[in-house]
Image 1 (cartoon, rainbow, N blue to C red):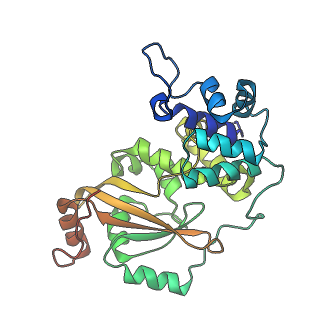
Image 2 (cartoon, helix red, strand yellow):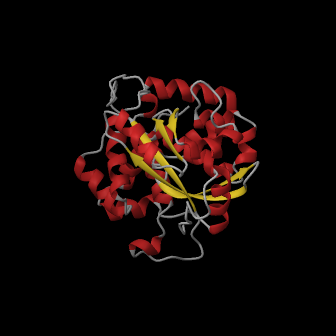
Length: 284
């Protein structure tokens, strides 16, 4: 399994930039999706050979000036620029910003109080392994019947890749699976022995469904969006989600779900036993 995360990220982002976005001509004879290596090199002011070395993993420590030029050429967002920098540091032997610390599993009282205040919305607290640490009763009524809360501790990535019920629960299973891999790969990935152990486990239990995604997907999951679920009592639901990262010392994130349409809002009200309109739809 390749560990060339920097090269993968650069290639995927290069292939995702349309020539027209950066002022280059487009034509019917283009066979390369996005930018050619030569075009990225020209935009960043480096040689084609150097871009090739970076993408192939033969050079993993570009200078800050080159990183900045590449980020500008690829039109990276602020979050993507931070991720790019982390990937260059992650290429250094023995690097991990977490220093081998185990995944946080303690829920601070104020975080639990916040969850309580979020009722009746489905909200869940996760650590970097996607272990489910705490949740609202609204989330329990939503996720419990799907099987998401099974396990000790329950874990979203394990459910998605190792539980047959996941493909029924998620009509857009491929997109959800992509998101889970991107979440695990955010940060040092295999330089973090705890994430590496989970990745090894999923490589065995899920095979190519997990392994191929590790080889082809860069990090940076979406922090918000719309997710579809099929609930045994509520039917098909469309849920907006927002991810809120807690402080680095917590090593946790809070995911809050809200109905994306009126039908989902009504279904969630029935599931939670709340008066109609307790959860209003938020257009995606």
